[in-house]
Length: 357
Image (cartoon, rainbow, N blue to C red; front, side, top):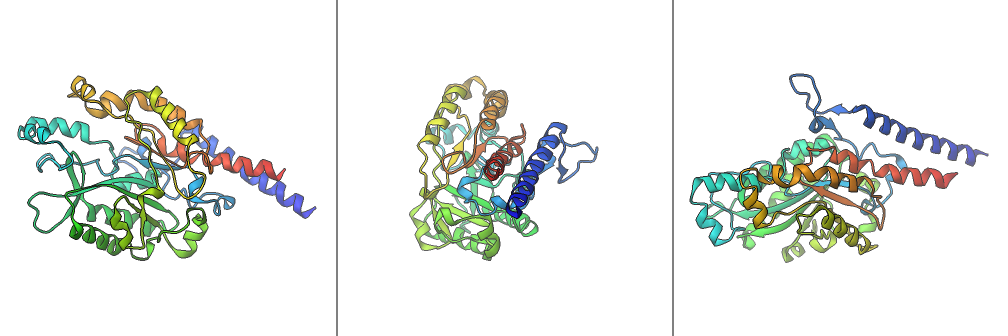
């Protein structure tokens, strides 16, 4: 009898939590992280700052590779420097054109893929960050910057912003995916690795078996940061995970239909063990796309009108070993992206509750 009572209690608790979340979603309720002066609430201010800590107990021992986790594409690109040189990720032809000041202004419209800073993304619930880095021509101190066509902020400043949030939210976990490197030699890689160690210290989680990594394990070890490094240099530091542990197939299309077909196909081919999985729910402009929407930029030309359809696809997904894991988007604040992804974990709650019946 006691076993039955415990199961029914757990069932009611899980269903109760799910009902509360659904009511809050319908009413547009949420905690405000940083209220604006008018006292109104925008989508970027709905706070998911502690969503991992708030997951129900039966999800604490589920592998992170089986949870639904929201991420951002080109996460650092909320600010790029029009006055800096064009990045080494661009072709010689673009570099020549960029000598004209108007060209850089137009480049900025297509280089920026996020509105929110690292801190604001974290408060909104984003836990995976897509990062591209480079040294800067003529920079004698070997400083490293984020880059997407144009140079962004210093990597060190971004790491410190993330660490500040993690210190205040000790049960939240982040994935930092360093997947593109430009104009970097061994000295630059060593400098970056040392910056990571200095910024995060004991929060760094050494590479291990993916299936063993759960919220409960990380909380016990006080680990909060997983860093993936798509470069052979990862072998020199135990806290750097190989890039193959977090594949992120790229559709490279402007068509929502083709994107969704690609996402479904790559999910069906997902490895059942040994790796996380990133579903890049993003559209990529072609040269003709940019030519047609030159002044409008990425957000107004491609993202704004297509993001609702992409979000509808997200709502149909289910997390799990063969389901979605990490889902990324451009301009994560334009729709209720992070909350939608987080609430997919409610489906795991429903499964657990029904199993106990």
